[in-house]
Image (cartoon, rainbow, N blue to C red; front, side, top):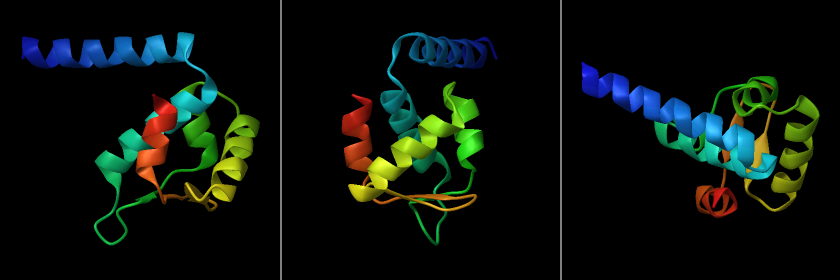
Length: 99
């Protein structure tokens, strides 16, 4: 049980550090890569069902910043954004952005 608490505490510390020090594009790319690995559906492994607003809240940024990033990333073929879903087309490129 103590081991599990340590893991959660370490993850919380990492997220706090990211929000305090990382650029928005890196935070969003890293979060999308994490969510892709955790929650991609079996039918569509690149599909992550959450809104842009939810992603903004998760990464400590604004809806405007997410929208701007998605417009850029869609043009580069990295993601396809819909109303309540994001499809990751190139997770390796997102990981490169995440550093």
